Length: 303
Image 1 (cartoon, rainbow, N blue to C red):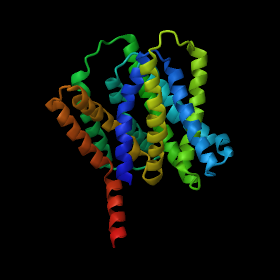
Image 2 (image 1 turned 60 degrees about the horizontal axis):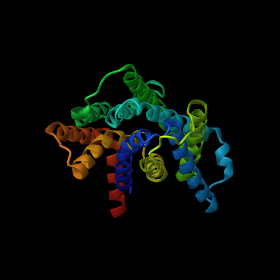
Image 3 (image 1 turned 45 degrees about the horizontal axis):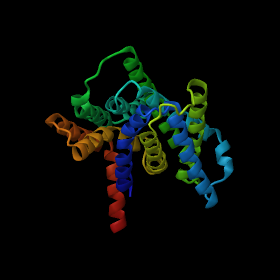
Image 4 (image 1 turned 180 degrees about the vertical axis):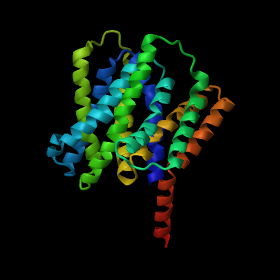
């Protein structure tokens, strides 16, 4: 189940960078788009959980949900949505792939957790693979806004990494609470923060919108990108560790390249194939402990 959930999550997340880009280019204000996406997804999930008696309203008033929403949703996606006005979705995917490395650094520096050498090497190998996959398409014109967009994405990934580590601690403390409810609550908080930021900084006018791509992007991101993929993310974190689910950030560029080749006949070079191989190798090294744990459980279940 861990393998299936991780695969589905990666396939969905691998398309979200492009979906965000489509929405922004169709005229959706970035913060408004992100806010509607997460607030709507969180509200739908939370109400569904409440109707089935699996969560209490009091969960929404816990400061832990507010802090997780501020980090993993507000901080990360306000940065990414704003930056994709000025950088390509490929650049966004590459810079977002620094998330797992930041988690390793934060675990070592702030939490004083010992990180194995093989995990560090795996992070570096996978990141090199991401660069090789996206490198052929990174023809960019460097400008002040482009550089600002890159720096903002990195800042957002720092928020993402801190939020992921904090989420794991909260899940350990809230073991009796369904991870879907935890995900819904934090998305509601991140969503209203994004909407507030939008109300302060963006005009709420539909003039100039391309409605079909704009609404299509928004619906896809609400249903698949948030309700399904983010729920799987928290489910995986509850059963593994903070690093393992975030490694989808390494897989998203190869998925984007694969869809481009399959659906649009885009060229796939040997550099890209080498990059995919490096990514897979790095992921195996990083998640060696999880792989051994799953194998031990399989042995026990068949004994």
